[in-house]
Image (cartoon, rainbow, N blue to C red):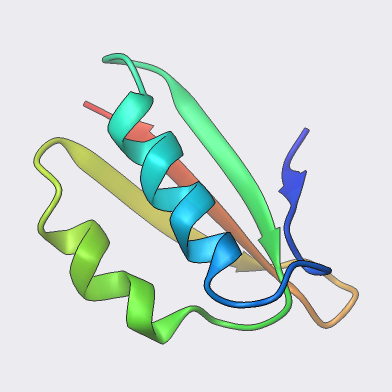
Length: 70
């Protein structure tokens, strides 16, 4: 079940996501619900070795972010 970060003020969601991404073991995943597309987060995720990510619309005007460590 995704961790809902929609009610947190910036930069808390980004800090939580980056911490979770760093903590993921190989083959493990994490998912989050965000209020909008996290454009500032993308370059940070792109620099993290072994982290793949994808987005989906959540159906309630939010965005789902899925992370996976290769």
